[in-house]
Image (tube, rainbow, N blue to C red; front, side, top):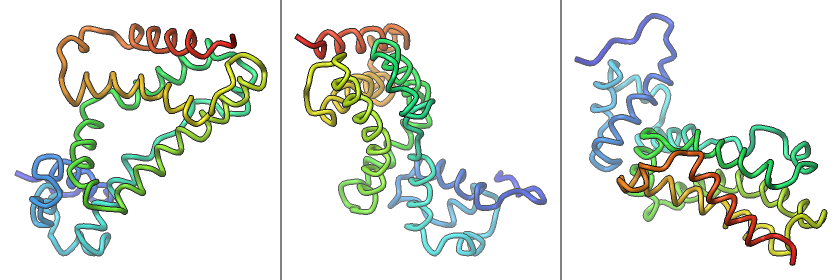
Length: 202
């Protein structure tokens, strides 16, 4: 039985949490505001107090859960440190944020709707760029200091992140039992090592 909201509880957050669960189970098209209201323990009419429509609720959910911090430290502080110190930290940070079932549930919701919604693609690209832009800036700084070979910094950053994301996708989304045998340390060490060997100056 759905729980009733406690006095003073943040209803908007409660509705978003319920929507996340319902969308993950039923998909965007299969979910109704009544399903979400039942899960949240509120009346369907209360949803419209916070969100104009199911679509607005869905976009709010995407914005909240796709929002990620690019780095655990400001980019200007990281530029002074070499890639062999910074890239493992970034890789571990990414794994700690993304290598979990909640993120995969979100991806499943997102993947089912991204092909049909320009707004969802825009939200995803905005948050991907929050990672890529500062990482590109870091890569450019390392190239300028002669620590990395001169290449396109954006493509260099994207190549690095792709190695991490591919491991997460196989571990969580595809459930590859072979990839589940590897620890986060093994993934980070391998991805960073291969990346650095391929980007060192000639």
